[in-house]
Length: 136
Image 1 (cartoon, one colour):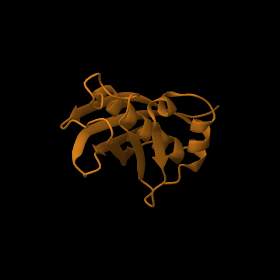
Image 2: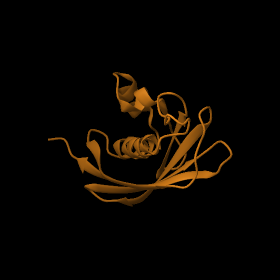
Image 3: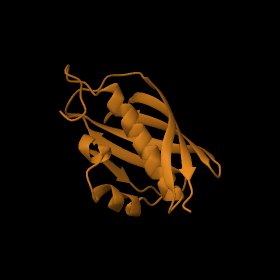
Image 4: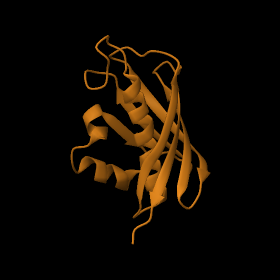
């Protein structure tokens, strides 16, 4: 999946993705997308661990980038995000989100997003449903 065009849009003005330090990457598979985020003062809890809310934001954003890449000219918005956090990540580490398409309908996309630390351990598993708004 090529996310170059979406990356241009993201980098054109301030937004949540840039504020939290997210980076999005193309993948060779048509049904996957990848993102990374360093755990730092922008996305950690006061205790020095990655915020669960930041993990959910990473998952929703990578799924949104992926849906937008599949549907050029459409607006793709998250309508449901549900996740489980299974391990803490300390400040200084980097997490990687791997989004895999589970369902591609004409108006709904469902993604499974696994977030892992640099050791490859699962941090969070998130399901994201996106609504695809076609341009008029």
